[in-house]
Image 1 (tube, rainbow, N blue to C red):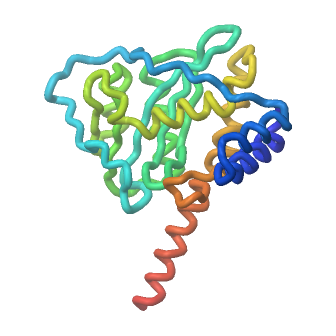
Image 2: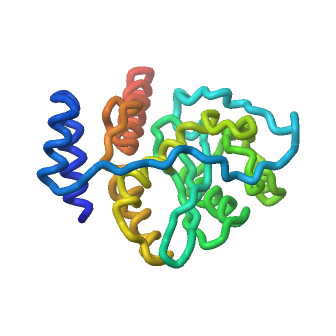
Length: 235
């Protein structure tokens, strides 16, 4: 299924929400697709035992007033015929935009550090921000602390994914809406699919209820326009 077909299905399904589930099912049958089953959450993170040192500063406050104020990050597994690959993502909680992501063949701290470096470059970070993650070994390593030394680090409670619900939800979404529809053979195929979903659909096209049914990119453009308008009124 091509992205254009998938985008059309998504638009029709969104419109069908007002008509009820039966209409949504009808649209899906017409286009030849079916709903994807999502596995229940299973604890897979190797937690580090740092006790009270790792504080939950975010406290599930998922709606900052501005971009580049609060990020959240997580790693998820993607199955391929040749073995698992690992997707590390960083989300800006203001718009739910994925500001950086990395696909890697190994599950180690380097994939997290690389993703943080990308995010800082893309967002042109000049002021401190808060970054939230789980307590996985990659997020408590010295390399991670060095990469985030100018940031305020926040951590979920042990084995409690709801503290990082937004990025957990995104990783479930990319699998349910896209990756689970393919038999992925290798790293290259996985990379192309992730790129297509995030860069060509999720950030730019897919509407989000948090963003008043705009895409993350549109929601951030609206924020910039409001700021520009406020400055013009003040001058």
